[in-house]
Picture (cartoon, rainbow, N blue to C red):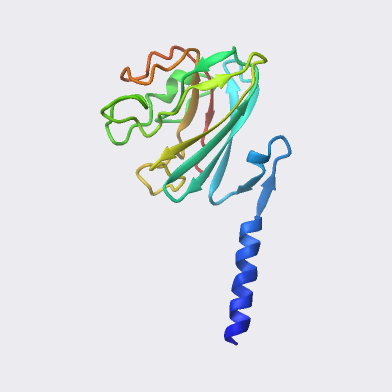
Length: 183
């Protein structure tokens, strides 16, 4: 009986690791498996409402890994943050400020710490595309967690984030975004 239980538990573990209850995405191996309990896929749109890409957020032990893939942006560095609420329509300003439940200063280079929603600049290639992976320490995909990203927005700015100036790193207008669903 004990051996049978161990075999069953082993098979169950392998099945979970291989991704039972998954959705597959063909475009990029980094976005290949989504488990609806521990991950969210977010559509990224521009100011015209056109879909320009997507982000995959995956819960990990100490935070959330975010992988974004977008097209149609101007080449260069763009401020890239989680904002405190879902935007309305294509009004990215309605997303509020950066997600900052700890009351920290802005920027990954700020000696006084960073917002939970601060990320490195999104680097867009000359062809207008970008693929980037970030890790948001303390962030969560659980509704009951004070660091939950659910109901928040991913926002891409027009300019480069200087990573130190509070509250937004002088990164300019908000040009694209996606809402992290809470269902």
